[in-house]
Image (tube, rainbow, N blue to C red; front, side, top):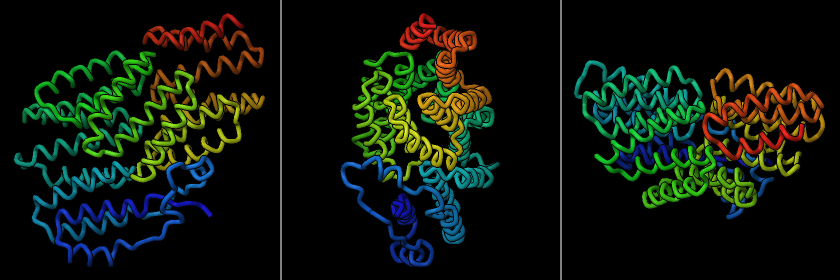
Length: 416
């Protein structure tokens, strides 16, 4: 029997949103009619979630959250004044992003923008909705669409002199440039956000920027600085009990340990992140952690386990339309097949990863895949092709100053 997750937790989150806008009697009536309880296979997975249980978890088609959101919107539109209705929509939009129901989130934020159009008193909520759309499309690696929404939001926030909004714009731009491997531009935007933050301190904002700086430092091999960033972020998010952000930080600390070859510590952090992500219905971070566990098992030559986690990551990432992570999963599948000496299959997976990364203009992930292709062609005794891929990756890592990767590439080139 497959374990199922997220349904009950999402249901509770929706109820909590309703209680902010309606009295108990109305909420109970609505809940009984529309928020039907479903029984989970196992509610409590315990302190330590085993690999077997994590792989058995059923992700898709468990809870028709989109339908319930539609019903809530109809109910609220007929029962709330316009201001309260917009506030409810905003909370439902954030809920939809958190639970990776992106189609619902796009619909909600476009509805808010339509309802607030032409009303200067609603410029703030309109700008926040534009920024949210920028965030949604960035999560799906649709960079051009994302940039356009962020630009629109930024113009309104500037006109309103809304410092918090401007910080969030800079932070999201920094994240996008980091995702596409342009670390110099990424740092510029994070530094702008930090300068603005001096004018308006908020734990949540500072924590988000610390996470992103930690990611940049991890990529560049500055592990002590990265760990300091992540600990600072935990100090910001733990007091406000933001479990979703804590799961994200735990995952990132796991990535840091993974890059340091401290795999047992990394697995501990990934398991902690997975447990929190399952509890909160956060498919995005869950997919990241499944993917990262697949990589570790591939490196440790536990190929069956690595393949199982890669397949589970692929299931999650297809649901969230996370093309960047899908490219990474194909890279890991390529590593697994290479280790199993199935070179033709490995070549297909790695070139698929490379193609997607090129399409998404992700220079960092492209370079990572080029290293793996260099290793593959070395095993296949195709020395010229091997050198070409290593040198391509070397060019990028020289540009961003990633000394650990450059040393690794030099070792490979020496051995050819």
